[in-house]
Image (tube, rainbow, N blue to C red; front, side, top):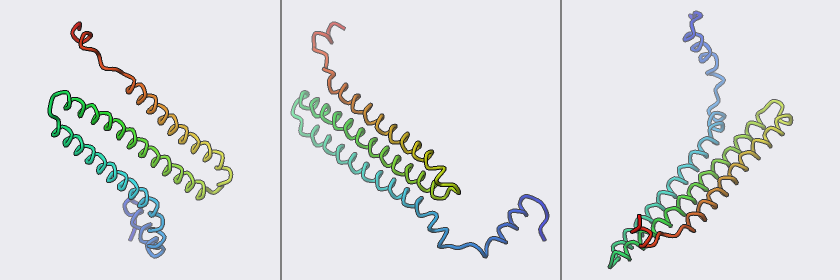
Length: 161
């Protein structure tokens, strides 16, 4: 029935393996993937709700502005809130990525035929991911503090340009 073509070899392998297939084992193998996707979906939904609430606050603040200076202040406040929200969302996404990376490394180490010999590599990979997360946090904090320290140009400086 089967010849030696790639398609037929795959078909033969599937036919021979089908009786050994265990749905419960397959579902258990995909559970971490499902959990990771669910965590990302929850994070995205939460971040979208926060962004929508911030946008509505800006709209309400601008609608309530009685003069151009009040509108400017509303936009300034909105911009500061948007930067803070972006920073928080990025931190949350990086934290989730690092947690999932650590989980993946743990799973690889558990499944590795010589898990104890893989342990130092796993430890190094986890440390590198955590260091990258800390570095990003520090860079964002420094950038936010630098942006907050910038003062707007005075009218005289703007007129001279």
